[in-house]
Image (tube, rainbow, N blue to C red):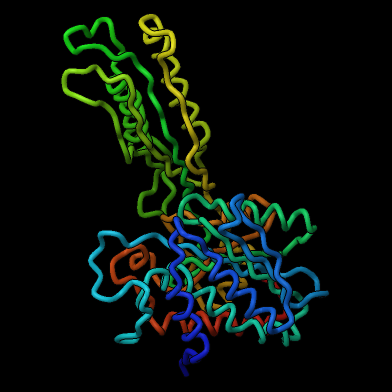
Length: 388
């Protein structure tokens, strides 16, 4: 007999989807809602803020006094929808054709909603371990919030046994994903009239040389990097996403800027990749400085999201497989907070409702069938007597 999604879980999912928590905005409406929902059940929440106190993480323990248990983790922010062609209001949370539509419905407010809907069940459970809720900010732009959450958890000496990150995997436990490392390169040259190029340093041309290096690296990954089968693209990738420079056709540009990223396999070294780019830029600088001593390159880290590598036989993976009634595991192409939890010493798996193919798209949706599977997953977690 198929599990039917409860009206409470659906209502909570609709409530969260209707909150505009695009990463550029505050997420406090959602955090305050979750905190109040838990407080009504007698659960205290740990809140950690960003520097401006406009965004926050929430960490709560359900089953205070029990040995530390499983983190149920989700991010509260969403990507924007500017310029996308939606057939419904992105904040409408309308249900149509057995699907819940709206920004964040799949990625990943529904998972958070179903966790909150089952909070009372977790509290009343006879399970020997606690369940922790970890809801973060700014995952979509670099996993910034969860770093503060993990630091606070360490400071409080909270040592969970495992973590389930509820990103959309169609409820198939995912045991690996690539990392995402993004950087900005600023190039300072020396302007001149375009008829006097020997007296100038063309920032765009110097930037192009480094961009060529990034492209050469990408081709080398594709040509010779050892494959990691199971990924859609079984090798590391590199690409340039933005470029800005120049003010007029007849002015040698003084300034240029570009942004690029590496998506590294769990077996690769993204820090080494970046070091190679910086070293190549350094090899160009002496000739630039002969013309203009202040010419050169500077680099800024935009985000560093580590890759994640678990195992089909990890206890937390076995737990997720049992809760989801899945014999399979999968690998996912997108980045998550899983690598940060894993690097903090917490065994982690990624498993949540919906598909990444709907995330970030116009008319994003998650099927009610997937939400029902997730709710059953939570109910089984509440009654689980062991991890693994």
